Image (cartoon, rainbow, N blue to C red; front, side, top):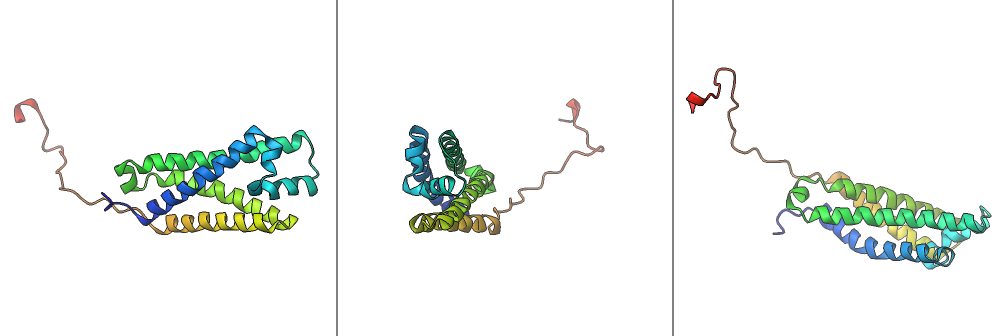
Length: 173
């Protein structure tokens, strides 16, 4: 059963096992109470940067919080699609599930990098460590995804194609 699993597939599944519950909980908290959810630990650096450096107030902060929640929910959705495609053996062998993983890694890396930069600007060290760790996880998975290629399909029995000299007619069967 586990003979056709690649290292990238296992790595992506482990990443999905972390990011789906963690980021969906953060996105849900932001959707329910945007300002309160934005000032929780995973997003506090973004909230402080928006209020201190960009001087956003009121509805602008709520809109930015919803945009952050939408980005995190998008990453969660692509990780869920990746896990669903990973359950199909043909998709796992050919590597066709890697597109969903690649999109999740790209968007997640962008969110984590931006949050890490914002955390360094406002001096929030706990948030900086959290976002740097998430970014390293995502970048490590992206490197494994780029380096490890799916297994090439094996050439099965060569079937002679029907040429012009060998037409298949009713009386030739």
